[in-house]
Amino acid sequence: GNSEVSRVTTTIGEVINPLTTSGKILTQGGVLASTYPEWIAKYMLSSKLMPLPLSFSNMLSYLFPETTQAYYDTLIEPLVTRAHPKHLKAALPASLYPATFLAGDLIISASFFAFALVSPAAVVAVAV
Image (cartoon, rainbow, N blue to C red; front, side, top):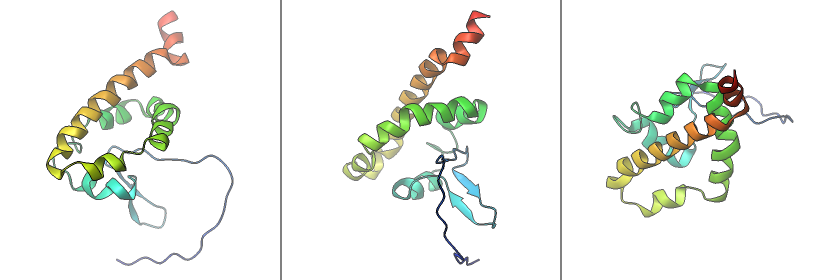
């Protein structure tokens, strides 16, 4: 159905960027929204195989949610802020999107494991 914004407020505090395995989130008011940015949401939510539902990154976010969020906040967000991938998407033909996402997913997943291994929690777990 239709929804109407009844008010907008300003708050100060940490920004929360929800990472979900489905790429969707149900808001308190019952509005289904995408967790993906507008420039890529349509592609991500309409994919049938890669990157959704078969994504190493999504599997990692399901299995290790706190480490995934820390990884995203520490490495991915600053990288995307400096070199936004929407320019790459605009330069590629649509037929190359799946292969590009697969390559990116593999790179992000491998670097996630490196990040997790050097995180303080992982170092403590190995030391014990």
